[in-house]
Length: 569
Image (cartoon, rainbow, N blue to C red):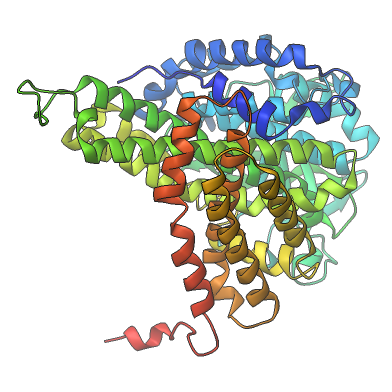
């Protein structure tokens, strides 16, 4: 099993020369270019030395139920304490509540490292970051002051509770009840698939729970959001007596074994005490603050797991000797064989495009906090980041197993774990089909294509100004035109949007990836490795956009997918 290496150089290149992180300096007084490299250097040490050694442990010794609590994997609590002591949880949080007030892009850079090193562990602080955002944006000042300082410091963690046995993607079917009781509410119901729903790593766990009030209207318009602590606060604001919320069981999953996925029961007896976040019946809008944060974060998980798989495949291909090549009678490393080289470069080139998009989107997200013109771009990027990056992660982790050959299918090698861990990414926080529908139905249709048109215009302007790799400029212009055409087919109703949405999302990802790779190649900092990645991407990966565009167009009224009833025998 190879040792994980945090790709600090690649991350810094993407932030500085593609995403333009320097644009954030006027908006974040605590950020300056001089702190970027030191932060990445420390992130490397933490992810490589503290987190990575626990990854296999989490897979082999998953959490377990003990006395109505979840006991996390051995060593996870120690790593969490190190995370808290190093103040990594405070990086991008508001100074008002104990944070450092730095750009979220730096938090993303840190998260990439711990997600590559141990995806299961990383989900706990990640969900807390999302919960902090939702509480800070929508809760009362009283709730913020009572809960945020300890959540920002990492002393307390947070969760997101949406799904129920009868309500998955269809949140309108939620049945969990919230009964008013003085200055609080009593919550009754069951939630499933709750990531890090219980553990012993922090002093308290703050659950954000969707539920209905007794007079709530039907559908999603009748959902409210509640803050439900595992331990109620005493008169001094400390974690006191246990609230009426308990884990019932843990799911047995295909991957991310080290992350406890809980069935949670709210209100076995008197009801779990909770506090309204935001306005009554407007909980879904409040929860979307956390969900949108989570969707970009899941895209990052796709990048991170794929990076770890690529590193393992690269190391193995350079070490494993088998067969010979023309001109060499001796056995050679399998990296010398053409098909293995193809797979390694496909992984490496894809990762460069994925990382470029991830950090461009993260900087846009930071800019959107102080400049509303960047909000539409951030919202447009979100489903593409979540959908395209996690789909690419499936291909890359599978290729990593393939490079290992039969050894990749053996669990002891470690690469099979990454394939299993990655499989959840296109599913949770809204399946990639949902992301595609969001892109086409909400982000494209709602503004009549204005945000996508703005992005396409920026790509066209950039490409026209590129002076390096002029042969690639001509190619990229043609693919941007394909994206423009596909956008127009959807807006004009020439194709069935619900069926064409997925292909349009993937088409968008590939074309944006090509634009950003070529943008990076214009920089003097681009080296031969980057230029080789650009060439491989354009020659062997971007060409997929041709078939995707053709597929989008084929979903015309005459080419709608037949009913599955035809498949009955």
